[in-house]
Length: 156
Length: 156
DNA sequence: TTGATTCCCATAAAATACCGTGATATACCA
DNA sequence: TGGTATATCACGGTATTTTATGGGAATCAA
Image (cartoon, rainbow over all chains, first blue to last red; front, side):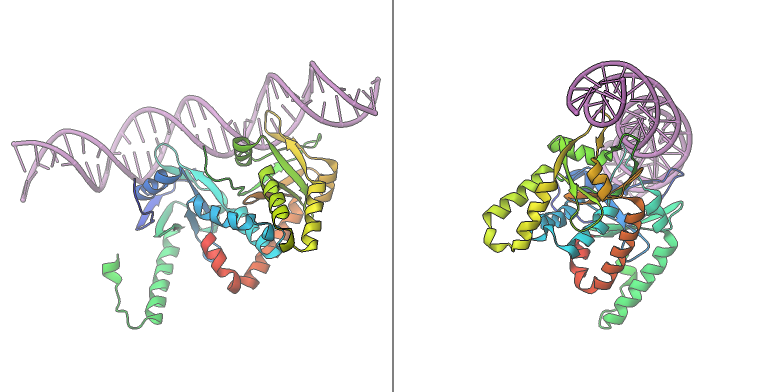
């Protein structure tokens, strides 16, 4: 039994004609050790798919359960967006999930997917888009933290 | 046995001439694993039907009796409305429920119903209305983003 | 009877589980 | 250390199951 649960690394996998993708084996190990399913949804801010464990969303749901929030409008709107889009994905015996048309379209993924670890969650990108995004992020980080030396190569 | 009970995803199903609708299989799995019936009532704030497990309403009831002072009178009234309107619905062997005229009319549903997950509850919409509502919410959330960010970030 | 509600069966489509294979990585041994 | 055996993984194809949805018979009520 492992103690920590972090999605890491960047993995490139093929998406077959049915929309099936192998979840990186490291990710699978994490998911299996807790639940056996994984939650995916369209990122609200980027053209990519995000994934996480159900317990993350469960926390949000619990907060909404309070009577105080039962009729709250703002929270109400939010839950519609989050839960309305999220969906449970289980993987077959060989470790593949079947991504929906909606998700693939949002992320502009056709035949190749890039899995990017983000700690408690991970993202799935179209390779081209990820390349651009990664460059953008690096530039951003450098701009905001001039004191930090470029770590490009070692960080990979 | 699952640990979490979240209604998720957006599913479009047909309402047949008898008024029957298939409850999305994911929803059914949740309902079956806990109770065998589901509670539906007219949303107080939108032209849609809301559904949940009885335990959610039970929790609401408990909180209302425990902390009466802390809740405003209007909230008390709202609770009355919900309980006055709520009703148990069971599904047949193929997983369909029969929604009442009252509910369908309130949600303006005729031959197609859209199920929208909301975590501990879910909503049932007329397709057109949902499309508009979704657009409204997206615009709203985007507008309020700065303040909402912390919550969203965690949920995503 | 008429109208409605519940139960049961049929079917097409979609989701899911299962099998085989080649490639890669890991473990093992001399 | 080098080389081989073993296990794991990604990925294609195929079989099986589940789901949504229509229709009909049985049940019940007015």
